[in-house]
Image (tube, rainbow, N blue to C red):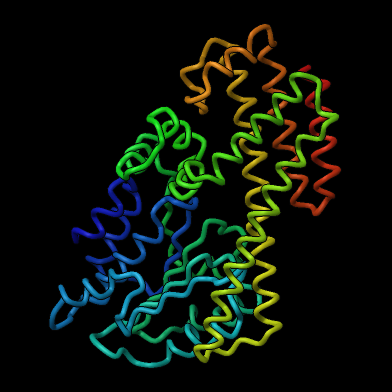
Length: 369
């Protein structure tokens, strides 16, 4: 197996075997790389695309080198990532569907990668269907998705699936400890476990925003334990999500406006809509992560109270967990974690976030205080 592909699939044995076999027998016309964020789908897709393009090339090493660059200057590698919350329909049509009709500029193949394929609207997915059904022989499409259930069945069924598993906590620890930073080994261990196999999330938890989110989640649970939720501690979780959403909206707007100035077709309305969608998406993700951290803290309280602190996620907060778990029936925080997960599911139904969080923490107070 080529060294680049071997390296990026080191901790993903199933994709390693599947992609190695594909290169030996001849790659399929369409793949769906599915698995959690941060599991290595993106790096594997780039390395796999580089090998497809290097096949029968006059200078394979030069092709690999250019294809592995991010962004890649290779003219036969088209990489489409959503700028905001969704892929623009016209961008999918222009850069993938129409472009796939043109023969390779170099070599014998063209590769089209659609990152976050679940962010394609139904209109885009339906438009892409014919390309998936009857692609030119030189075209290979790779769809990446962390939420494959959001793809139309007609899309998923026409792709060969390649499944990526969450990365083990030990692998995340090694990755997080490789760089320079102020994180302690205990904090790195906690971030690796709280990230649930997602390297990107682990890095967020070690950044300022992630550290603040962990602290707010801990304060929310502490208020429920102390019978002090009348102070509405959940509002800080909402405020943090709002701030993250505003930052994402501003960043997306800046990118889209820069592209419009460079000549890409972007109306003022397109820019405003895409920016707002990106902001809403980030806001939702951060709020959901905050609640997930609350559930993890409650789970750890149950573990420590049961004498199993070695399985706790929050490794850098063990003393606080011991103090809070003292005299607490482990069944109570375990049930509390279930209440948090129930609330996370309810927010998918567009219920009032403020009311849902208020109800949650008063229920937690009644259960724990």
